[in-house]
Amino acid sequence: MITGSIAAIGAGLAAIGAGLGIGRIGGSAMDGIARQPEAASKIQTAMLIAAAFVEAVALFAVVVALMGNG
Amino acid sequence: MDCSHVFEFKVKRLIVVFTLFLAVLFNAPVAFAQADTAHATEVSSAEGAVHGTEDAKAEKKFDIGKFALHHIADSHSWHVIGDTYISLPVILYTPNGFVTFSSGDFHHDDEAKVVVERNAQRFVKLHEKIYYASATANQHGQFVDLDEKHHASNARPLDLSFTKNVCTLFLSIIIILAVFLNVAKGYRVRKGKSPKGLQSWMEPIILFVRDDIAKPNLGHKYERFMPYLLTVFFFIWFNNMLGLVPFLPGGANLTGNIAVTLVLAVSTFCLTVFNGNKYYWKHIFMPDVPWWMYIVMVPVELFVIFTKPIALMIRLFANITAGHILVLSLICLVFVFNSLYIAPVSVAFAVFIGAIELLVAFIQAFIFTILSALFIGMAIEEHH
Image (cartoon, rainbow over all chains, first blue to last red; front, side, top):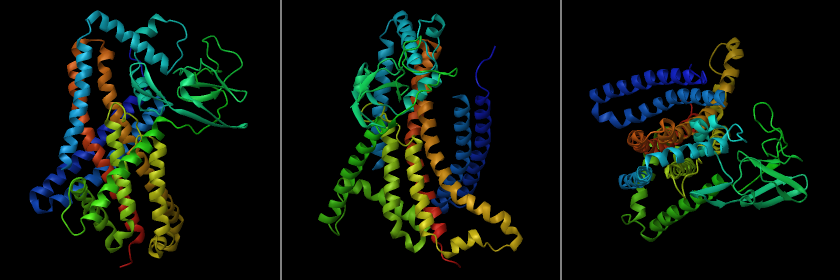
């Protein structure tokens, strides 16, 4: 018998989404840096900002899951 | 330069984790298991659902979620080690005026069992919240009325206490002032000369904020916003770092407190709104679309003004909170599995996540600052 909150599944789903998103961002940034190594610092900054937006969505999900749990 | 700093924190954390690990190792396995369950009961009863009576089942159960949430929450006393606490002042605003007493008067009771009487009013503390005590105790010896969800239904005074988070806030203000007054003095004394000491340690970071955050996003008007951006950056960074130190003077979870991030986000919101030029407001109220689109566009644009700071607030709060919960959960694996052999795994993961958290502490400060600069930059951008 499994007990617990279904909110954990929601948090897991959000993690999948954020993983896909951040993976794409990171991969594309790698591509960009490989093509144009001199623009690495600019690409990194843009990458971090984009990653923060994706990550925020996942963290909203975590907060909602926590609230649903508590 | 900042690498050595990062390394120092890592080493401190490592030492603490390793000491904990040794402490666990030196207990005989049987005593360990017993101490463990005893600790678990203590935690779970100090925390959530009320276990007034000794319950054999509850003794076995260790609620990792409640343990973690307790540790990231604000507190009226500051836990040092073992049974040693620093009692912080409690300041309450009641209809009869202000009431102050030391949180030590509760004798570290967090289950509403100890009543403190001041100004003919009776107070109890339940889960770090202060309530007016009920006249009589319930069957668990608690002076509160609990509903079926174990939430107290008593009235609460306005709690303006000097809590652990407030303490850390002042501490970080002192640290930041000490560091930056020193740095500023360095620039005054050695004007035009190369930086020295603390100054040469902070200068690259200040230049990083200027060249990588302010200038690209704010354009030529960046100087006006530099004080705000620097303040926000260093405040968030220092507090993230303080939150990572697991013992005094760290241990409080200031940037993982939504009220603190709310204030920071409101500051950015105010700067954006008050500095917005006519192009910014025109973009919101009269965008370049056919007039019938305004019905959709204007509410959406107005909504976006508010969602930006709200996202800022939740991003910082959730990142730091999630990091703390993660580290605590990994440490708790030992108690959950109730096995000595989990300890190395748990410690290794905790050290690994701790190292990542150091990076996150910096990245979150950077993200908050650069997004603030971005939002302000969008508001002050000239039309072209």
